[in-house]
Length: 256
Image 1: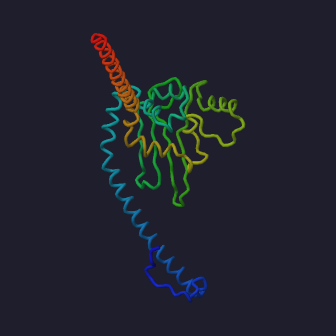
Image 2: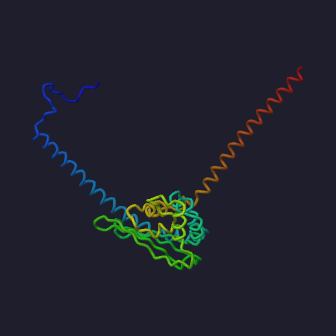
Image 3: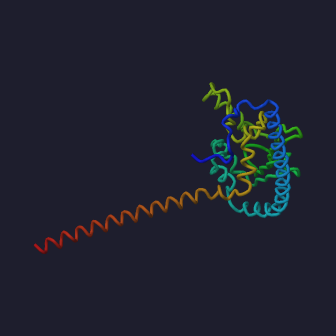
Protein backbone atom coordinates (compact mmCIF):
# COMPACT_ATOMS: atom_id res chain seq x y z
CA UNK A 1 0.00 0.00 0.00
CA UNK A 2 1.33 3.48 -0.87
CA UNK A 3 2.18 5.73 2.05
CA UNK A 4 -0.01 8.76 2.68
CA UNK A 5 1.46 12.15 1.69
CA UNK A 6 1.19 13.41 5.28
CA UNK A 7 1.89 11.83 8.66
CA UNK A 8 -0.99 10.64 10.81
CA UNK A 9 -0.84 10.94 14.55
CA UNK A 10 -2.13 7.56 15.82
CA UNK A 11 -3.01 9.11 19.18
CA UNK A 12 -5.38 11.55 17.57
CA UNK A 13 -8.95 10.42 16.99
CA UNK A 14 -10.08 12.21 13.79
CA UNK A 15 -13.67 11.16 14.42
CA UNK A 16 -13.87 13.52 17.36
CA UNK A 17 -12.73 16.85 15.88
CA UNK A 18 -14.21 19.83 17.59
CA UNK A 19 -17.61 20.95 16.34
CA UNK A 20 -16.16 24.39 15.70
CA UNK A 21 -13.44 22.98 13.41
CA UNK A 22 -15.98 20.89 11.52
CA UNK A 23 -18.29 23.87 11.07
CA UNK A 24 -15.43 26.02 9.80
CA UNK A 25 -14.46 23.33 7.28
CA UNK A 26 -18.05 23.11 6.05
CA UNK A 27 -18.21 26.89 5.63
CA UNK A 28 -14.94 26.91 3.66
CA UNK A 29 -16.22 24.12 1.41
CA UNK A 30 -19.39 26.11 0.83
CA UNK A 31 -17.34 29.18 -0.12
CA UNK A 32 -15.36 27.14 -2.65
CA UNK A 33 -18.56 25.71 -4.12
CA UNK A 34 -20.05 29.20 -4.43
CA UNK A 35 -16.96 30.41 -6.26
CA UNK A 36 -17.26 27.48 -8.65
CA UNK A 37 -20.95 28.23 -9.14
CA UNK A 38 -20.21 31.87 -10.01
CA UNK A 39 -17.61 30.72 -12.52
CA UNK A 40 -20.09 28.29 -14.09
CA UNK A 41 -22.71 31.05 -14.39
CA UNK A 42 -20.15 33.32 -16.03
CA UNK A 43 -19.17 30.54 -18.45
CA UNK A 44 -22.84 29.90 -19.29
CA UNK A 45 -23.35 33.58 -20.09
CA UNK A 46 -20.29 33.61 -22.34
CA UNK A 47 -21.42 30.42 -24.10
CA UNK A 48 -24.87 31.96 -24.63
CA UNK A 49 -23.32 35.05 -26.22
CA UNK A 50 -21.33 32.86 -28.60
CA UNK A 51 -24.45 30.84 -29.47
CA UNK A 52 -26.41 34.03 -30.19
CA UNK A 53 -23.61 35.34 -32.39
CA UNK A 54 -23.35 32.05 -34.31
CA UNK A 55 -27.13 31.93 -34.68
CA UNK A 56 -27.10 35.32 -36.41
CA UNK A 57 -24.26 34.24 -38.69
CA UNK A 58 -26.19 31.11 -39.73
CA UNK A 59 -29.41 32.94 -40.65
CA UNK A 60 -28.51 33.85 -44.29
CA UNK A 61 -27.90 30.17 -45.10
CA UNK A 62 -31.34 28.89 -44.09
CA UNK A 63 -33.35 30.62 -46.88
CA UNK A 64 -30.83 29.37 -49.45
CA UNK A 65 -31.18 25.82 -48.11
CA UNK A 66 -34.98 26.05 -48.04
CA UNK A 67 -35.06 27.14 -51.68
CA UNK A 68 -32.95 24.13 -52.68
CA UNK A 69 -35.10 21.75 -50.63
CA UNK A 70 -38.22 22.79 -52.57
CA UNK A 71 -36.66 21.14 -55.63
CA UNK A 72 -36.77 17.73 -53.92
CA UNK A 73 -40.23 16.09 -53.79
CA UNK A 74 -41.35 14.82 -50.36
CA UNK A 75 -38.14 15.97 -48.72
CA UNK A 76 -39.62 16.73 -45.32
CA UNK A 77 -41.95 13.74 -44.99
CA UNK A 78 -39.03 11.48 -45.92
CA UNK A 79 -36.85 13.19 -43.32
CA UNK A 80 -39.51 12.76 -40.62
CA UNK A 81 -40.15 9.11 -41.50
CA UNK A 82 -36.43 8.38 -41.29
CA UNK A 83 -36.04 10.05 -37.89
CA UNK A 84 -36.48 7.50 -35.06
CA UNK A 85 -38.32 9.78 -32.63
CA UNK A 86 -40.53 11.60 -35.11
CA UNK A 87 -41.43 8.45 -37.06
CA UNK A 88 -42.74 6.89 -33.83
CA UNK A 89 -45.61 9.42 -33.94
CA UNK A 90 -46.49 9.06 -37.59
CA UNK A 91 -49.52 7.04 -38.54
CA UNK A 92 -50.45 6.40 -42.16
CA UNK A 93 -52.77 9.42 -42.27
CA UNK A 94 -50.05 11.63 -40.74
CA UNK A 95 -47.69 10.55 -43.51
CA UNK A 96 -50.31 11.24 -46.17
CA UNK A 97 -50.84 14.74 -44.76
CA UNK A 98 -47.12 15.47 -44.47
CA UNK A 99 -46.70 14.78 -48.19
CA UNK A 100 -48.13 18.30 -48.56
CA UNK A 101 -45.47 19.78 -46.25
CA UNK A 102 -43.19 22.00 -48.34
CA UNK A 103 -41.12 23.93 -45.83
CA UNK A 104 -40.07 23.86 -42.18
CA UNK A 105 -38.50 26.76 -40.31
CA UNK A 106 -37.21 27.05 -36.76
CA UNK A 107 -36.79 30.54 -35.34
CA UNK A 108 -35.14 31.14 -31.98
CA UNK A 109 -36.27 34.27 -30.18
CA UNK A 110 -33.79 37.13 -29.83
CA UNK A 111 -33.08 36.00 -26.29
CA UNK A 112 -32.63 32.33 -27.18
CA UNK A 113 -33.17 31.34 -23.55
CA UNK A 114 -36.77 32.55 -23.80
CA UNK A 115 -37.87 30.08 -26.47
CA UNK A 116 -38.38 29.35 -30.16
CA UNK A 117 -41.00 28.81 -32.86
CA UNK A 118 -41.42 26.00 -35.42
CA UNK A 119 -43.30 26.82 -38.64
CA UNK A 120 -44.69 24.08 -40.91
CA UNK A 121 -45.70 25.28 -44.41
CA UNK A 122 -48.24 23.25 -46.40
CA UNK A 123 -49.58 23.22 -49.94
CA UNK A 124 -53.31 23.09 -50.54
CA UNK A 125 -54.48 19.75 -49.14
CA UNK A 126 -57.67 17.81 -48.39
CA UNK A 127 -57.15 17.89 -44.61
CA UNK A 128 -57.08 21.52 -43.38
CA UNK A 129 -57.31 25.11 -44.60
CA UNK A 130 -54.15 26.51 -42.97
CA UNK A 131 -51.14 27.31 -45.13
CA UNK A 132 -48.86 27.57 -42.09
CA UNK A 133 -49.00 25.74 -38.76
CA UNK A 134 -46.82 27.20 -36.00
CA UNK A 135 -45.94 25.94 -32.55
CA UNK A 136 -44.13 28.15 -30.03
CA UNK A 137 -42.25 27.18 -26.89
CA UNK A 138 -41.71 29.83 -24.20
CA UNK A 139 -39.73 30.01 -20.99
CA UNK A 140 -40.72 32.88 -18.70
CA UNK A 141 -38.46 34.75 -16.28
CA UNK A 142 -39.19 32.32 -13.49
CA UNK A 143 -38.21 29.39 -15.71
CA UNK A 144 -41.72 27.99 -16.23
CA UNK A 145 -42.19 26.47 -19.72
CA UNK A 146 -45.30 26.89 -21.83
CA UNK A 147 -46.35 26.35 -25.42
CA UNK A 148 -49.02 27.45 -27.87
CA UNK A 149 -49.88 26.60 -31.46
CA UNK A 150 -51.97 27.62 -34.43
CA UNK A 151 -55.57 26.45 -34.31
CA UNK A 152 -55.93 23.89 -37.10
CA UNK A 153 -58.89 24.59 -39.38
CA UNK A 154 -59.79 21.02 -40.24
CA UNK A 155 -61.93 20.32 -43.28
CA UNK A 156 -65.15 18.40 -42.73
CA UNK A 157 -64.50 14.91 -41.39
CA UNK A 158 -60.72 15.26 -41.61
CA UNK A 159 -59.73 16.02 -37.97
CA UNK A 160 -56.86 13.56 -37.48
CA UNK A 161 -56.60 14.29 -33.74
CA UNK A 162 -60.12 12.94 -33.16
CA UNK A 163 -59.50 9.86 -35.26
CA UNK A 164 -56.28 9.19 -33.39
CA UNK A 165 -57.94 9.53 -29.99
CA UNK A 166 -60.78 7.19 -30.96
CA UNK A 167 -58.32 4.58 -32.24
CA UNK A 168 -56.21 4.76 -29.11
CA UNK A 169 -59.19 4.55 -26.75
CA UNK A 170 -60.27 1.31 -28.40
CA UNK A 171 -56.76 -0.16 -28.47
CA UNK A 172 -55.48 0.74 -24.99
CA UNK A 173 -58.01 2.03 -22.52
CA UNK A 174 -56.03 0.81 -19.52
CA UNK A 175 -53.08 3.14 -20.09
CA UNK A 176 -53.21 6.16 -17.80
CA UNK A 177 -50.31 8.27 -19.11
CA UNK A 178 -50.50 8.28 -22.88
CA UNK A 179 -47.76 9.52 -25.18
CA UNK A 180 -48.98 11.80 -27.99
CA UNK A 181 -50.24 9.23 -30.48
CA UNK A 182 -49.84 11.23 -33.70
CA UNK A 183 -48.00 14.20 -35.13
CA UNK A 184 -51.06 16.43 -34.91
CA UNK A 185 -51.96 15.50 -31.34
CA UNK A 186 -48.39 16.48 -30.43
CA UNK A 187 -48.86 19.74 -32.30
CA UNK A 188 -52.02 20.64 -30.40
CA UNK A 189 -50.92 19.32 -26.99
CA UNK A 190 -49.85 21.97 -24.43
CA UNK A 191 -50.48 20.04 -21.23
CA UNK A 192 -46.81 19.69 -20.24
CA UNK A 193 -44.49 21.88 -22.28
CA UNK A 194 -41.56 21.05 -20.01
CA UNK A 195 -41.76 17.39 -21.05
CA UNK A 196 -42.12 18.12 -24.77
CA UNK A 197 -38.96 16.54 -26.15
CA UNK A 198 -40.10 16.54 -29.76
CA UNK A 199 -39.85 20.31 -30.04
CA UNK A 200 -36.19 20.08 -28.98
CA UNK A 201 -35.68 17.30 -31.54
CA UNK A 202 -36.93 19.57 -34.33
CA UNK A 203 -34.84 22.51 -33.11
CA UNK A 204 -31.56 20.85 -32.16
CA UNK A 205 -31.41 17.69 -34.27
CA UNK A 206 -33.43 17.98 -37.47
CA UNK A 207 -33.28 21.71 -38.24
CA UNK A 208 -29.46 22.09 -38.17
CA UNK A 209 -29.00 19.30 -40.74
CA UNK A 210 -32.14 17.60 -42.09
CA UNK A 211 -30.16 16.04 -44.94
CA UNK A 212 -28.62 13.48 -42.60
CA UNK A 213 -32.06 11.92 -42.12
CA UNK A 214 -33.29 12.38 -45.67
CA UNK A 215 -30.26 10.43 -46.90
CA UNK A 216 -30.76 7.67 -44.34
CA UNK A 217 -32.31 5.26 -46.86
CA UNK A 218 -29.45 5.78 -49.31
CA UNK A 219 -26.90 4.91 -46.63
CA UNK A 220 -28.82 1.75 -45.71
CA UNK A 221 -28.99 0.76 -49.41
CA UNK A 222 -25.24 1.29 -49.77
CA UNK A 223 -24.59 -0.85 -46.70
CA UNK A 224 -26.88 -3.53 -48.14
CA UNK A 225 -25.02 -3.48 -51.45
CA UNK A 226 -21.72 -3.79 -49.59
CA UNK A 227 -23.05 -6.84 -47.73
CA UNK A 228 -24.16 -8.40 -51.02
CA UNK A 229 -20.74 -7.75 -52.56
CA UNK A 230 -19.02 -9.34 -49.58
CA UNK A 231 -21.28 -12.40 -49.79
CA UNK A 232 -20.57 -12.61 -53.53
CA UNK A 233 -16.82 -12.51 -52.91
CA UNK A 234 -17.15 -15.30 -50.35
CA UNK A 235 -19.20 -17.41 -52.79
CA UNK A 236 -16.62 -16.87 -55.53
CA UNK A 237 -13.88 -17.93 -53.14
CA UNK A 238 -15.76 -21.11 -52.28
CA UNK A 239 -16.39 -21.86 -56.00
CA UNK A 240 -12.71 -21.41 -56.81
CA UNK A 241 -11.79 -23.77 -53.98
CA UNK A 242 -14.23 -26.37 -55.28
CA UNK A 243 -12.86 -26.03 -58.84
CA UNK A 244 -9.30 -26.48 -57.63
CA UNK A 245 -10.34 -29.60 -55.66
CA UNK A 246 -12.02 -31.11 -58.73
CA UNK A 247 -8.98 -30.39 -60.91
CA UNK A 248 -6.74 -32.07 -58.34
CA UNK A 249 -8.90 -35.17 -58.35
CA UNK A 250 -8.81 -35.34 -62.16
CA UNK A 251 -5.00 -35.08 -62.15
CA UNK A 252 -4.71 -37.90 -59.65
CA UNK A 253 -6.96 -40.07 -61.85
CA UNK A 254 -4.73 -39.47 -64.89
CA UNK A 255 -1.60 -40.43 -62.91
CA UNK A 256 -3.20 -43.75 -61.97
